[in-house]
Length: 156
View (spheres, rainbow, N blue to C red):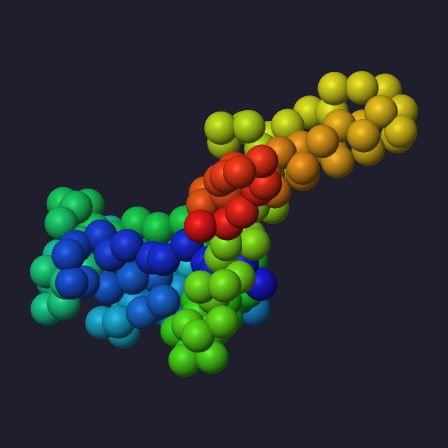
C-alpha cells in the first residue's frame, strides 16, 4: 500500500471529500448538510443553488455557484487507503517504507517522468537496470557517510 495523497479542503478548516456520503449504486452524493445530488455520467456532482441557503456553506465552499466535485472511479478504495493511513500501525510502519518507496519511484522515473527502456531485448535492459540499481546503492552509501581513509572504504 502506498500512502494516499491527503485531501485538501476547499475552504481552510472546511469539509473534504471524505465528509460527503457517496452511494455508488444509486449514483448520488450527499453533503454534510444533508443535501443529495446525482452524479453525472462523467462522475461530477454540482450542488448549485442548494449551497446558497445552506448554513454550512462557509465550511464547504466560497464558489458563488455552489460546491462542485469530481468523484474518482475508485473513490471507495481511496477512502479506505486514507482511513488506513490514519491508523497508529500505519504511522509506525510508514517512515521505513517511505524510504523504500522513494527509491523504487526514483528507479522508475527520471525527474518525475516515466523512463522508457533504452534498448531492445531483455538482456540489455536488464543490464541497464542492474547498473541503475548499483548507482542508487552507491548514492545511498555516499549519503550515509561513505568515505575513503587509508586506502579503505568506511562508513562514518
